[in-house]
Length: 405
Image 1 (cartoon, rainbow, N blue to C red):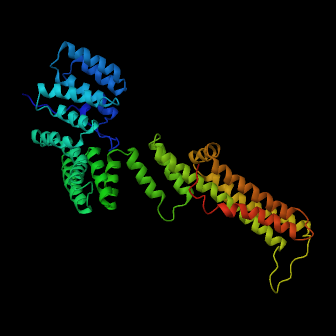
Image 2 (image 1 turned 90 degrees about the vertical axis):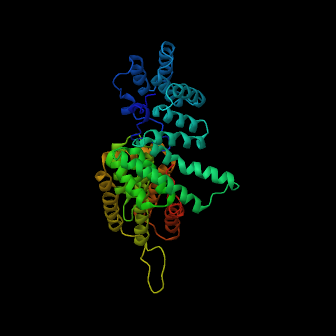
Image 3 (image 1 turned 180 degrees about the vertical axis):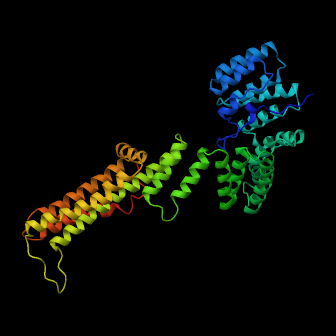
């Protein structure tokens, strides 16, 4: 029997989530091997568009014409795997393909995916080791087995030991998996999936340096890889000394490369919220300046200022207020990237706490203006206004750090 490697459309993993390695990239799904039957070429094109029902119909017609078309059975299995609840039908399709070509590595790979989808992860090891035996120079067998082997070992170990897996045993399983992933990297240094597997293993092992190295390798191959880009950006934005505006710019740049990344959108929202939280400090500083102007609280050895404060001095306090807002808010906002500016406006419309933050800033600023512009003759009422402007904001400013919603 002639041994076949899987076609590009069967196995290529570029840029996909490592948790679902059976997903195919659009580039790979569109790839058409020479010599395919026209029906299979049309099936590949429909598969790339996500029209799985039409793919199954077309492949069914092809198999009615030629029940021994191994490539059609493999494609049918792949299509069933993309539809929830059809793992058993995918297994049936791979059974038919392997009955015709027992050494077809493409059929074996799809069978491993079908077994995993059917909840039979432990059974995939034998299938993938057969792939490696048949084609030791083929990277997918090593990468996929490395991705699943530590889980298989942990399941077997836990079953034999009352459900518990020791740290030492898990480390051993991870090392065994990493050896397979390293071999996949050696065989296919320009494929993303082996690096994704090594990155997952490094994360589980607590090896942050290796995890960062794998992220760099992934981004070298695929600069728009959503997960690696999200991790890299999150790490850069959380580095010591990175201010909210810098973090927002980092997330905005990442979103320009991966606009559909939910972690990047959340990161941009969080950084934008940090920017809005800074506005309240400006308002609180204004309240503090207003209290200092009125000399609201007596201290030993210090004579309090006579009230009311002259009108010229009251008007003069508007100058530092305006300067604080111009430099701390307006100028800072105008220097932000357009994408960050738009997100700030959007965040205020979409989320409750950003509106609360702005409301607190407005309330504190109103109290500051009342303190400075009203000609108070005594201090009890201004003291109440001062605490009314200061206390509500100060009471929430420490615990709403993470409340972007």
